[in-house]
Length: 75
Image 1: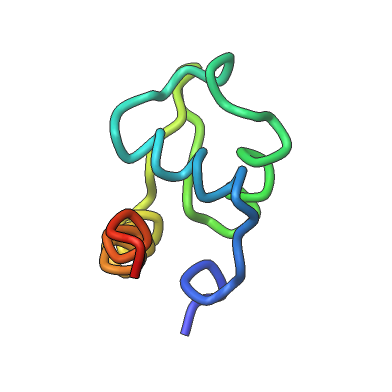
Image 2: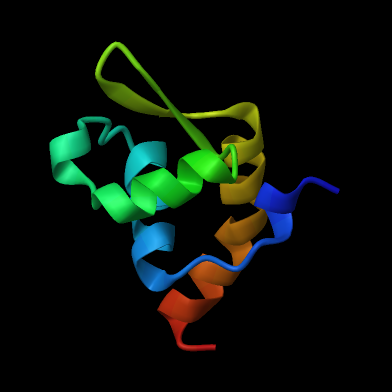
């Protein structure tokens, strides 16, 4: 299994990953330390000055989505 799928993420890293997934791609709108770690985990990549999810990042977001919904409901 790829490390990026199982490595624990800090709340700031989770937020950055969700923002990228929702289309916020300008580095100035994301914490640089969070983006750096997400890059090391191969969850995001930077191209032409924009941050994008990798295929692995998309898998991680999909896997984390049920947990995010449960937290919003207070479960």
